[in-house]
Length: 466
Ligand code: TRP
Image (cartoon, rainbow, N blue to C red; front, side, top):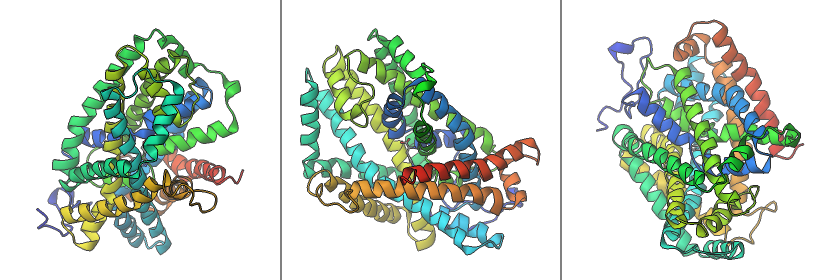
């Protein structure tokens, strides 16, 4: 299967000779499906509703939409374009372009930042997805039937205090993800998203119908679309920018590596627009499915990260059909997390295959094992190591802070500058499939100027500079 490990020249694409050794997506649709699967994750179904809730609802949603357009879209286009041009893992793709353009070798840091971010996020995403796994099962078994808010908090804390249970779910999630990745681009990732993404859509529509049946749908709708700009603060705008960045899986290698499997001739700007639109639509639908259920029980919409594991089980546990629909909800969350996790570790696996001459199976085993081991630190942060802190934070809080507040914003700024100023204009125009005109300049100013400034603001805010 990997006999042809060399980068080969194809007659059809003499102008751009490179081709990924891992194969290509079979169609534009499968690329969009896989990239949307990466983008739709815990960020859409867990984080977006609760930060929208905390930041005043509709006005926040509006600002978020603008952030996706002015920040997210130019950046995702930049990443996919770098990937398709470079045709290898983020480290090599960027290094090759650096060499070609005789730019400063320090730019290579960008590739490392992206690859490592994806790897580290995978390590803790897998632990949290493990909780989702277990909650889905417990919901289906009726553990949350008729519980009170206090019971729910107790159940959650007790769950987190059991390292062996957490280990089981974390291992199962890692294993399943790596099994798909080991199978390769077309036979693994593509097959998985072709089956899972339609199921995800059906699940979210089913939950939406259920939310409609609570009689509180209008309240949820009003909450999500109530344009009360007085509730909007400078801080919520920065949060919206950060979310636009996170939800599109930017600066963590995922979009770049998926871009490297994109056949030539497919328009990157159009495909990326569809990915961003689908991702945003799902985040909004998730909010519309969750809030009516929360309101139907007089619960707090702004209940922060506990919304999913503490608030929602109370709602589902006390409503007609909640046992079934609650289980379906966690299944939705699990699928969303699964298709994201695949894309997080793919860049690492591709790097092991390309730079360390491994077969895909061996690379998946090794990459998966490494991330799984790192995940143990996160797992223990909720129990045995909860008291062990560095800079006032436990292990999980530290690596989460490092990746989301430092590595990803820095990676994002570098990618944006790299694609717009380091890559030759000829190459980037060629990748974007456009001529030099207003469209190109809109992209170049957004990616090369506006996005780096905005991400820099988010960065300073998140390191509590202001
Ligand atoms: N987009 C994912 C979500 O919304 C989170 C994420 C960030 C991610 N970086 C990633 C997913 C890299 C896959 C790969 O939950």
